[in-house]
Image 1 (cartoon, helix red, strand yellow):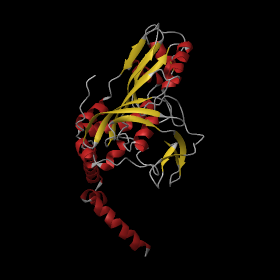
Image 2 (cartoon, rainbow, N blue to C red):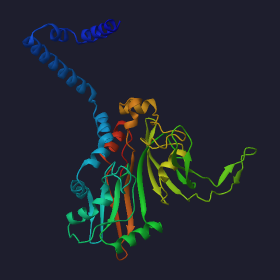
Image 3 (cartoon, helix red, strand yellow):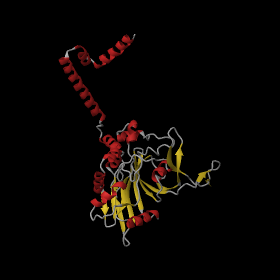
Image 4 (tube, rainbow, N blue to C red):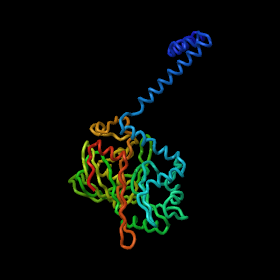
Length: 354
């Protein structure tokens, strides 16, 4: 019975390998070597063909795949290599401050699973700059890992404290660009809703920032009613303006007045009902799942919904203006990254004139 079972398993396996496998079983050593070489060559050809099919021919899809792997690549490079890359990303420097165009996928601070971050390479970056000092550069503020754009560093602790105070007292004008799903109504306005962090109870419990409004509409007559304030909630104010709309998406200019964690993402997703393109975390409340895109957006982006999970967050710190020097003012600006401008072109969101 055991022999029958063994034979029953052997025949399909040999048949699946085809003539090459049967040649190995029934021929001499020379014939077996020839058949094995043919089989190996055929397998290599199949693998090569499969890899060619897996590489998207469309430039946008290739770029999406590249960005999906970018964070991992940044974690594998040597810190000195990362510092040199950030040196090339410098957009402004003087005796006291340095501004870089932060790349996508690079965390500012360390944490679990983070081998490389901006904080760790500041000593090396400082030595690569003109008029280098012995002391390392200092952080003045932060951007999310997935956010690109202007980031200010200081050459001394004294300068860093001055800039941090400017941010704290809301004297720094921050301008962001974001591609969002849908159109905000009205096209221009102010979102002023407190934000709090809460645990989401689902099959995979996790924490998210969410709205903690101070008012609600009464069900009986629709009047505005003040409600009890959440003591853990933080005041959050975001000014927005629509710059363009097309393909069920919009390009927004955003000015966060306050600096609460994930403020722009939460105000757009939960306040206006228009999540940022590629914001998979805040496109749903009760689950962690890829963002659902409108059909016309998928068509214009030449993207399948099942590949939407690779879309990067389309949020860019476009410009920072801060008072600096003797009654002076420094304006720092960065162009959006290539994946951002490519998405704008495909979605037919015309670039506004600066």
